[in-house]
Image (cartoon, rainbow over the protein chains, first blue to last red):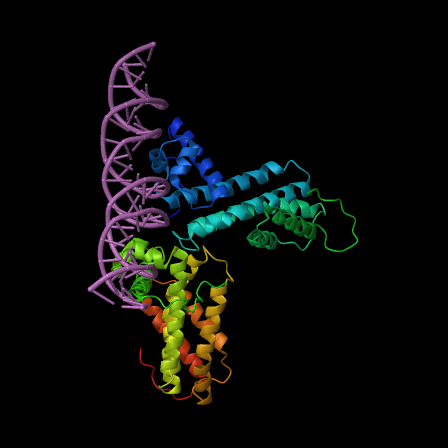
Length: 200
Length: 200
DNA sequence: AATATAGCGGAGGGCGCCTCCGTTTCATGT
DNA sequence: ACATGAAACGGAGGCGCCCTCCGCTATATT
């Protein structure tokens, strides 16, 4: 019943694909910048396409929100693969920070989405699955390298970051700092262990 | 800082008071019937006043939502007084059922309100206080009469009803039935005790 | 009854939603 | 290369909502 699984019945014309991407990326930026209530016309303008084109690709606001949501998760999953090139801890840290940034904006998105679909709709389950299978190898690798405390579960880590992302504050840097502390906690389980300073 | 405490600086002209009440009641009905996103113009039409009049009394959507919210709580508190004439248990049951009905609609209202004010704004605290001091005597009286289990705390009861009210279901009667069960649980703490059938 | 003024109401400007359809661009067969 | 049908584009236009402004009306006061 997912609205996203249409393995191209017909592969979408080149310009159409281009426009679809432009809208998606404009929507992502706009939602992040102005909140999930941004007008669709503004998004179309920002994407440099006509309003009609936007509606052709995303017939309802829900469809667009959902697509952005899914798109972000997919990018996050892809990022996990690319980060595999780094050392275990930097890879994990980078990914978790990115996850944090994502979760901050996700709340607005998810809240708005819930106006249209119910809490345990397909989208959410699927996305959660993707997220976990993307993150698991990174955590596993860092753990194997002795870079994180051995008792850290991925679900706990994600919860923790989710909680931090939910913090209401006027100062967005605060989130970054708090996240830094929490990540140090993930890395070291007991006091006294020498640590490299984590750059802000 | 409450927006509701203006002990009439000047007592509001007769027609103005009338119109204010009409709007408030129309808003309550409309919000209940169509959700908290109902257009203000529709509410004005329903109340039989001009849109300008609505805006005169409630300059923002938030103001109106808040007023409805407060008004409902006040009615609930007043109901508690009137119910004092009934026998202890019927009084408590009637009030709690009414509380349940209120909480069902309240969720939509509260959710919308939270778009404007933060979670622990004045309004909420005040209303919670009023609610509790209205309900406490009813519960106390029923307890004294041996009609409810002695270990029932008002806050627990309210929480329970709140939880039931939150249940998502297509069938609104289900809520009523479930509430009935829960109230029986409030009344009787152990099996085997004879009970009068609770009328639906 | 006369006057001052609080209060009324709705027209109107701005904006967002969404549809419809004439125009443009692409893909495909020759 | 070119023609041709189909896919995709884009924006005008209709509608509803938000909110303000201000000429008119109802009420209170003397």
